[in-house]
Image 1 (cartoon, rainbow, N blue to C red):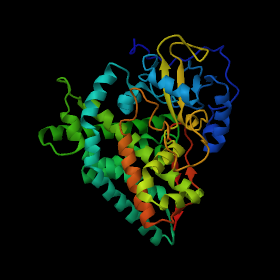
Image 2: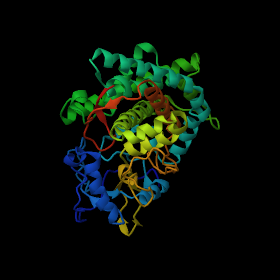
Image 3: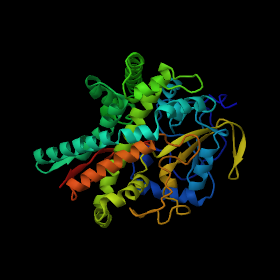
Image 4: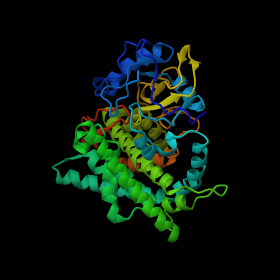
Length: 431
């Protein structure tokens, strides 16, 4: 049953849409605070709400009549945990994409049991907390490297530099390349192609026009897949201590990952693993700039207070704003009749501001503890496998930054419109 819903058909044409706009490009070009005003109205409805399809999609589907918006904390957690009722296999993006892109780019986050169960066990056998602790020294060294680079660029630029290009963007890619074992000669192109993989809303990266954008996305995914499968073949013959070797040799109950599965997971890690850290870092520095009292509190005990601070910065940034599920069957949810094939879009940026579960959600409080944010997922089988890697990176970078440049401030960020990643495209910074 869990593999049966492959159509993108969604809803019926006579089902009325909610009057709050969360589907237009204009809405997703607004700021987080502006969008939050709409989400607050929807949360007050006390149920899920029905909305038109996202405007101007890469793949137009005639029988796509809309989606259910899941905006409250409790509803999002419930949908996340009911993986038999709400499927990931048909796609996890708010937008429609060709099935080939879904298969190549989403790996385990776009799968349902039993396939998900098998792959998650195999990947987890290689991607362990012990391995993450083993690479912590490498992560700290890369944090030092990117802060060196940032301070040099500020000096060379007469006192300012682009924080995204010089710090937030290179850090996770250095770490992922080190972890995976990507050779030096391939790293620059791998980093660029991974950036293209999340940049379908950015004409600077992918051009304009549906055919141009889709063609460029296929090209990027083909390159990253090819690189991963080539490296996996090499590591089976000549193993090293990198994650590609661990993935290529992982075995559970006599089963191993195929080259295609390794390639898809590599795409997932290089794209999701890069952007989540990059956006949390950028939004984090901006938050410390606009809340100087919070920065001062953190600086009083940087090492002791950093773990809680990172959790709050990740909540504040909510780097992945949406994930989609598809109803496996006709069912009732929060008093609404959901039809098999309906899309349900979970709005993490709304749930992380839900006052019913997070006290004073519109205040940045680096001392917040416990912090029940759901930026790494709401539990269930799809909880973020790389959450410890993200935490390691953020702690290392902010410790390095605030130790060596405690007065670094961020200017106004240039945000990239989009409904998936909370992208800071550029952001000036200065001492």
